[in-house]
Amino acid sequence: MSIFYLFFGGLLFFMGLAVHKGRAYFLISGYNTYSKEKKEKVKWRT
Image (cartoon, rainbow, N blue to C red; front, side, top):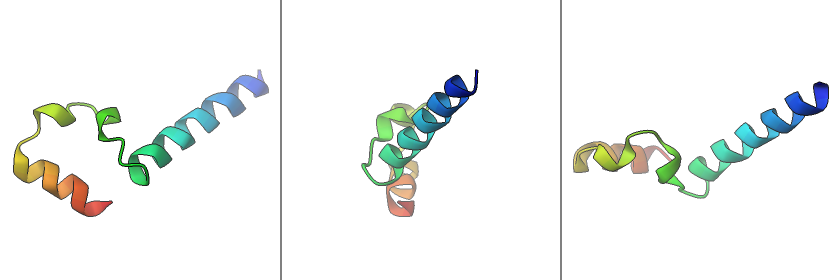
């Protein structure tokens, strides 16, 4: 059971890293429906 938790925790960590450093914005829920201003805010924060 702990192997499952380690795998799932690692998966979430690397997905977060992909959004933050790799700019994988498609992983953010609803990103494609954001207005241009809101998309620029998201891009500016990273």
